Image (cartoon, rainbow, N blue to C red; front, side):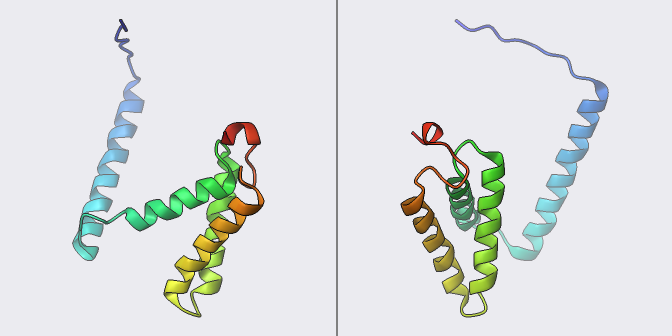
Length: 113
């Protein structure tokens, strides 16, 4: 059986966290007013986030950053041709990295499996 451990936080930490939550709530509300809210709102974003993590390598923070940068650069370079091709280009990059380095660019084989 596990015990619940209660911790106390400094008042500064609590107030800063409250301010951050309030700012995020305000930003989300204002964004929802201008763009709308629908059930599949974050699906495409999650696909790109998953691709960035896998391209960079599981367990590698810097790899995830590099994977996100590679995906972004790929989309920017391909999108002048056609916007749907930008998504296709990023998915092709994902497949090429998986074919060449299955554990990602910065990942280690132990972390991947």
